[in-house]
Length: 640
Image (cartoon, rainbow, N blue to C red; front, side):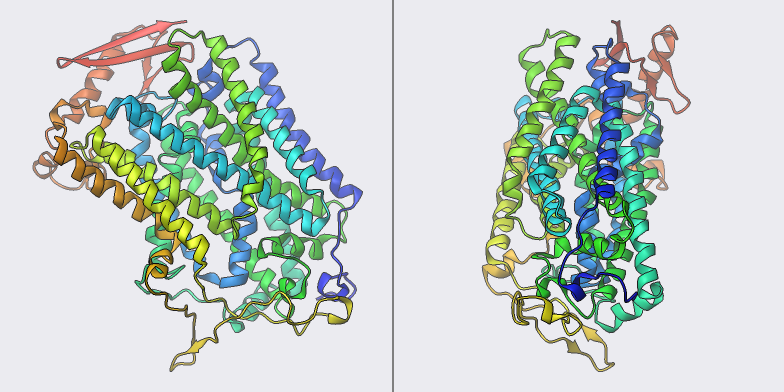
């Protein structure tokens, strides 16, 4: 390491922002706000909710994929993943495999149904498949999830950066939250998509800057890897089947698929982005283009965590008293590395808050969409487009204010990465189960949908609450403090410490990360948070189907084929037709879409057309209604 640098663990003082840093950070906020107002002015004469909420349904797959990437790869990922590497080691890296499964399911099972139904809110599907009440239930659960999640995303990085850089806590929260709310409210989906694209670039630049400088300070990445390995943090071979193991291979790869599928497949914030593409093929391409982006951000975050541990391997900043929580490690690391270069720490803060802005803007836009589509319009069916567009802007403002008001709750949730992913499992995964129940199982009825979803939410909240209260011990490799300059801090070596179990060494001399054995209800509560989504989906399916068959199942032949996914055709296209036909359970999928296309081709090309993939393309100024009655297909096109 460079001796002349003012490292915090040597001086006992944290580096703070310079004027250049504040300027760089302010410029990032200004660019994001400018993009929002640019689209507000550009489209000021168009009062169309489809343009505001879905960008007219004509967006290119590249900005959509960048927005998909930015929406949930937020500041929580940028702060939490390096801290995960530092505290627990490299097992978390396996979660990258789950991204492929989640994207594949989203692109080929769920998105085609949403896209062909031409929905604005994915919860419209629930009314078509089950009932209005089920749709309203889904909207409420989604809104609860997003408002809590956005509060975590806003509060956590503000707290971390306040503790490390001296940036005002409430100044950061109010300024970032307010500006994000304003540009989302005035600019709509186009503003969200393009600001997300800009913010994704900022995130990657910030991660690369700290990784490169960190490797220079340590003496190369190989040196950092060797130090991390010597200190029991490099291991990829935890293949235990025990579901209470926090990060086993199976929890990360299988449990992770369901966790991320609940985000990409059935969360309105992500579905809305997919539906803004010009065709189904474009929506699927956006999801798949997003996949390598997910892997890049995961890789950079994990590599930063390795280098960060090597940097602090002889002086843990938490035990030394420089910071209060692991979520503040990465900002401290950046200030130690880059504070000697004016403006670069400001670039990093811009990187962190880019993740915050992208998540909040996506959440506000999607919550406005579901409020208008699922609650207001059913109550006021004759509402004009201009009034509806105005209302969506008002809703975005109201939800933004609510998000600011709930930031205090986020301070009580502990580890931000685990808290956020647990929230997806507790609240988001039951929704994945509900949509799966409707799309895969044609026998499910609305009673089963109610019973399965509510049972799942209650049980998952019970497990999540129990886990938070009992705080089951998890093994964490020991940290060291002999390299700290204790003469420069008032705290002693025993402060802020937590006991750790000694590592177990096998016959080959390998260190095995072990955890205490919980008993009784504590074992139930110690279920790995990565299994929450899988468990929640299983509850919805089992309870939902049981209640459906007890109360009178749906007749598959009576259902609109567009509401059901031919799952065996999707997952097993190699099977012969004579095997796949009975697995469609009497639902004729092929004929329905063929009839839609033939009817579309008869329409004037100025109104409606069919793209090369066979998908119906409808201009922004048109509405189309495709109806199936008595085996007849009717296409009604209305020009505004």
